[in-house]
Image (cartoon, rainbow, N blue to C red; front, side, top):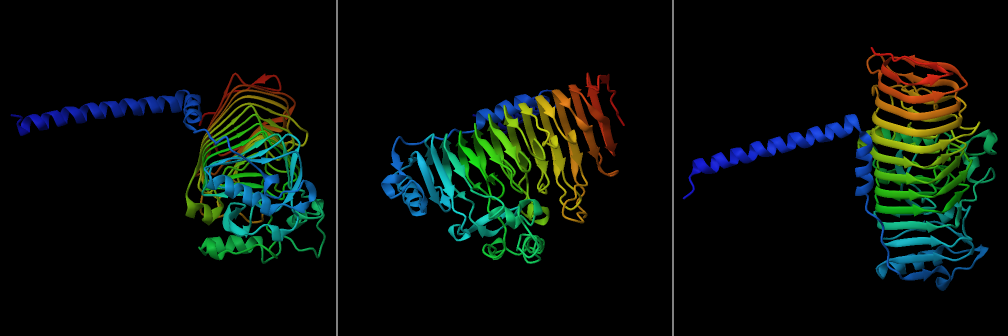
Length: 479
């Protein structure tokens, strides 16, 4: 017969063993984090589930699509996608030819596949984009549907070597930006009118429900191109994307997504190439970005709306990508209020006289946010205009951007980086006295033709290990 004392003793042994195991796991996790974070990246990649689709094919031509570049095929796309999903999924095929359409809404288990010479032309009529729950510059609202949209879907994809053409230029979507370089002139309505952008921000700060933040026609807030909202297990592969109205690839509140071999060529206003927001386990690889704004910009919501959602973006991985024109190669912010952590960038090439920075973090005391654990290695940089690494807690582009949410930037590492033309500064880092930029490491970094070694303000522990700037070895600053 087993006594209570025996049971108690066994429980104690079990709990002690469990404690030792957990401590061991914690030490192992800590070791991965502090000694070799790239092992953590490998684990994340292995954990991302792959999309799988039925062999069934649904040709949009069989649902009434006409490839003349003039006939509106929105209904044909809708019918093919819905039929495909209803029957368990498969491939919705876009054959070679030019297909005009309004918004395309994906459904579960659907792979929208473009043949090599297929081109989807998106309508320039705002009425072809119904009002949906979306986001605009980090603030949720009801607005024009993204050109391609999925909400609460699983196992979805856009694949093939065809082209998605937003057709945006200075005569339509881009003029709404209010930028003179994009066709705007005094008297033309834009997103900057008093009843548009700032009204949305004010509504969010006042806590007005998203369902009541209704914009759309007459409010001039441009739609995103491809937005997967609250989706899981998604793929975008091989397609070419051009001439976007606004942000181009926008996973928001989406987990487990792979973006592979995509070419983005779009030089309009706010034409960020890829903006993961409130998203986790996002792998961006083998892509080319040639953009009018940031090539990749990792987001986490704007101001009060970001703090309301409170989902950090994490485990964002960028591999084997090429960045050409853009405000930054890989950027974190400025819509960053919920925070970002665990960003990995490796084996990328960045080069253009129109690329301002290679790696950038931008926030301010109105945005706030904790940005930590950013790891970069094996980077080849030809030319950048301003600097190689910029970490800025005083980002200010819309007038006064100060508040009571002091940001945190810490644990940023660059390793095995070569730069031929470094611009004005190799490193530009500015923090607060109460919240300095902390723990910056440059290891095996060689930067040529840079005007100044660095510009530092309230920076704690910046380590230069085997790092040469303008052929001169740089010493660490630990304080």
